[in-house]
Length: 403
Image 1 (cartoon, helix red, strand yellow):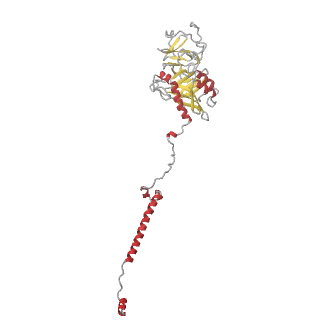
Image 2 (cartoon, helix red, strand yellow):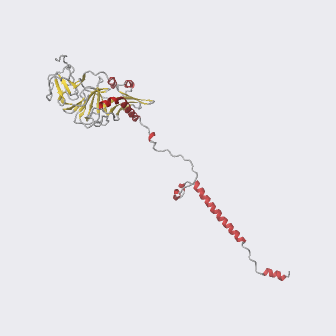
Image 3 (cartoon, one colour):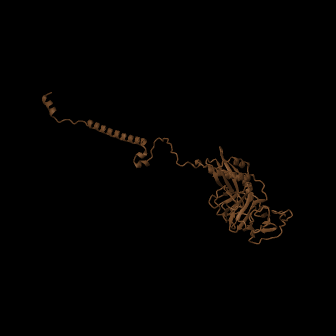
């Protein structure tokens, strides 16, 4: 080939190359972008699975994270469920006493109240030992809200056993058994024999050895009341202990309130309801004849209807409840209860309801008024004993009625 041709070939315009190299670079760059994008997506997914929502932006907390659920242990609640709240021994005891009182006393109380349904007993815990395994107290079944009657009350002892509280009401063999082994911190040595006689429910003598529950020489009105209960009011209104005894307050733990139970050494108990300004002597303490118990009033802390007037409701009872006052002797008088009337008799003198009754004190040997004793403040109705009343001898009187 001539040189001129080769030289022309060298000196001529260069050929245009195909864009193969540029396209490869673009493909390579695009691949890098795709790899980066895929990497970012994978990183986001890993972040959602691994990192908790609280570690991300606040907005992320509202997003749903579709991840495999994991088991977590819920923290224990700071407040246990009601069914697991521990119940104190005192609360357990009150519930058991309520059940026992209703189970054992319901038939008699329904009959006395004249109702079919009874209210929940009011339990008053007088004392419990330091180990919470012995207790002593009282239970009262409230009267219906429309009745003004003496509440039905009981005394109980309780011992904690492996199966719970063992509760016994006075008047039962179980009470006598618990009384023998109860610690002195729950039943004092002075109370023990008195409670034993009270629980034994021995026959009550006609001569109670008690005076009327107010000052000797004062005349108070004898007020008609419910069966087995007399109402009294008058004088200075101060209700006094008719004899020595151990005192207990029922129904209310508030100072100056409650039903007062006084258990005397012979096992007989006297009860006082509708009092105000009740003595604050500690339960179980010994009070002496003439000691202050409270004032006549209208309060009924154990329940019942509105009191019609100021008075003290007075009853004599044993462990089984109030007993009839008929033929019982107090304060130099013999109280009488008949279907027609309530009245008092003494040496042929009869004092009907709403008339003044003089308290002669304790006079078991002679019904005569001693020389120098005050005379009644009012003139009682007199006359021969009612034909409804058997002609029984009064204290110090011979069977034929002579003194």
